[in-house]
Image 1 (tube, rainbow, N blue to C red):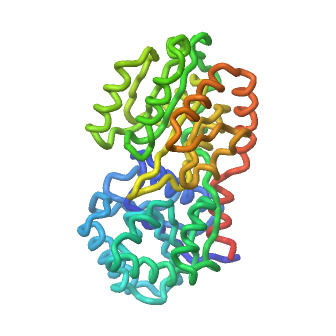
Image 2 (image 1 turned 120 degrees about the horizontal axis):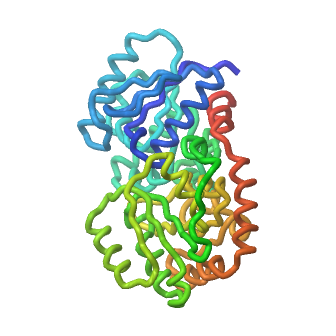
Image 3 (image 1 turned 180 degrees about the vertical axis):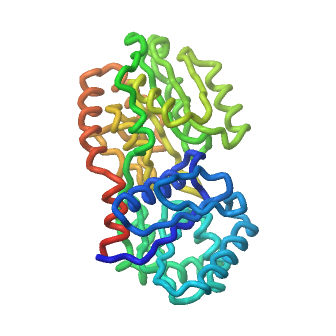
Length: 372
């Protein structure tokens, strides 16, 4: 099937790590490799890529009114000069917000693909006016890409008119991290199990709940674990709270900040267990979780919570252990189970590798851009 020229619009893009930014880069690279005609419009300071065209916009990406106005006016000027068939891929929350606010300024006949990562279905349905405009945007779209069954169900409930447009296509592990695997890695002391948690330091990611559950495990086990938190600090007050809990623990707790793909790859290779335990919030949700597949690809058993689309990325009892987000005791028990059971860790990790290989960005790009 021949596709129109696709322009992927995003206000989030590498070098900053994040689910939406990684999604945009991965799907664009895979589309280009499949000879799909794609161009990326990304914020000022984005990472350049020589394999396909990235147009750096003259402003930093955000959800602000200024970013929305600048994006829509730039698009308006561009679109009214073009005669070729185009498809706009509104690929993340910032770009989506710009279309909700000012999309009426653009030509009506432009085809649109919208990706919903999860939080859009919370953020854009709280305000009555925004709720109406968001529904209109979904109805006017050609396709709506959702990454999890959770997002699919939420979208169908919110906008029944868009049911036939929804495409459930899960994400995949980061090729940027996987490609940096080292063939020779120095493994840590096997007497000390290393638990790694990858994600921005933010209440929604549940680092506090993870530390509180770790506090509950027997002291003799705490003495034999190292916990590494890798990710940018979004809220300093939250970081201080985490530091306070960490000081009262026997386990060694480390916060690395944001890591390069190479350093993150090495961290995965040196770790024993992956843990990321998102919580329920009023303003956002874990819509999928690319890092779970990323960790599974390295053979790590997963500790996670049943929040949003996490259950699409982690299979309970097969690639990891899931707990209720409000049940610290259950989370603690799952952690203890993996610490004390190396055979289970190996089983879950082995299944995780197979599970991760079933998810590729090539498949995502092909299904989204080439299939009806």
